[in-house]
Length: 376
Image 1 (cartoon, rainbow, N blue to C red):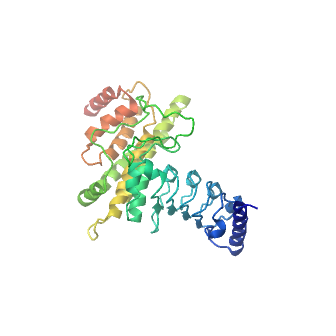
Image 2: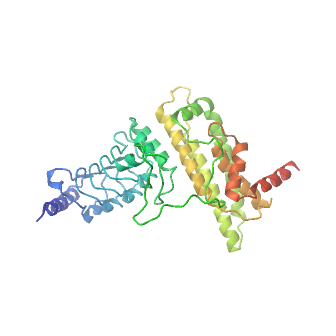
């Protein structure tokens, strides 16, 4: 029996012991497991596990944890793991340790909003392939505050193309030309983004991701206005959704467009509510620290990511100022209102850009027609 086979047998025995004792954690880290190169599928039967420690083993595949939905902590440091996709639906995860792994793509973790919310260690990923390939991740990995590091990393991941699409980092920390992340063997790098309407949102000039100082300034000087603006636009979107619900077309093509617009409105509403919920109700008796500012920054960055989903909606070609056109303008206004919360961006700047991107080159003409209707 090889050392790996002995380690596998020891892992089976430990799994049985945990099951028999009803423990909520399992550790496969001592000398008996050093050569363990695969997780027994029986691990998936321990549905009550809250913590798994497999650090410093030879394990590469973590598929058996994919349905352990109560899992809160997972230590993968110094393992052979490269693929985090089995973790994508484990929404209770608050602690994931990846130090010393060859993981290059962290985006499967992008929806795990509990990361970093229960103190140390949160999301820890220093000395990974991801930090060698992406300068932004290298910088984020060094943030000392656990919650700020985790929130800021999730916010950044949500600005990237959705996993499993490949993405190209802006820079590498070593100054070398960046390489595509998530590109499988034999795949070609994606072409440049298509200019076709609805295939990608081009932000207005001056729009940028919030920094912590931006978020803190917004909270200090304008958090009541931000709350009011969110509530007002959410009310407008609710009204548009109510109208959508009572005017459902029978034609299959029109129905598809109708449903696409409804999804756009829902995305806008969710994004605005995310920002609203991240704004403290009362800041009069408490300092604005990095954690509070980080929550707003993460919510805003997540809202910008949702705009990419909203931009997938392609409008009909005529863009006439009809009832449907008014609703489409409302959807674009919801998107632009999120952008207008960024420093230096006004609704007047954002709305034409958003509408043109969502609805194509005839959008400027349509907006003029709407203006005529509004003035009549």
